[in-house]
Length: 342
Ligand code: MRU
Image (cartoon, rainbow, N blue to C red):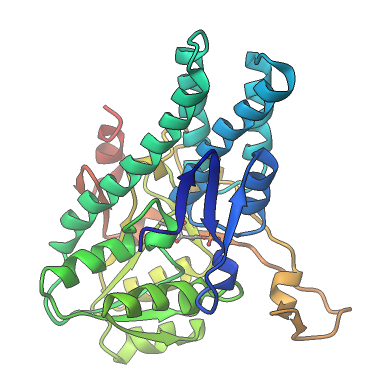
């Protein structure tokens, strides 16, 4: 699964994840506006992928300004990054990627081929993400035993990243290594990343996968043989508190109650070195219509209120280990997470 994002002839092509798994259509992004739309409206989603797409957005924004004004200033870069920063607030990979693109601009601004160098930087972010995922997946696969039943939530697969995936990358690597694994994928209401994306990715890969409604987790952890839980992350604080798709906290509580290992797989770009704990992580609240409608059909009366927090925070004490491209992180997390940045 590597064709969900590609750069061709000055445009970024994105597989529209809203239509999966039924239709494979691509959005051609020719400029900054297209990229902002793609992230905001969930054409693409998943923390690492949001960061990568935003990086290409900076490159496209620069090209647009040069085409219209003939020159570009620091101020223009700030404006481009502000527009991208406003798309989705929780995944720190977005802000990490924007910072990296700003640094690249500072380095290349006086060079004649600056626009190409900025595109190259976005491509480098993309390629490095795939490499990091492969590496963390190899480390993570050591934690998986032959015959395991693994529960995962949302989609932390190739589709959520530059390629290969984080939580699903670990499963992919263990499967490729010959381990027989069964995966339980929660539906992940209301956007259904589990039912539509995770199940599809694993099915295509030949992994034994079964979808369950989100409300099954307690029952399954209690008596249906879940051996491990693996999820991805949108932002991890220095103490290990973890933001991920809404519902992750509930799953972590159940896993802890029944002593089921709970692993979080994420690249170092998902760790936020600026915040000490999860209280500082901004939680996105999305339009309540995403709860009240499915494929345009109402589930309830228009007058009835609904709420949709897109993420929650799992306190670090419920996480058994983090799986990163630099290795497996043990407790005490505070001590070892800081070492990721040295
Ligand atoms: O709202 P989404 O689909 O962007 O949320 C995605 C998740 O919560 C993923 O689990 C997370 O970004 C990790 S992706 C490797």
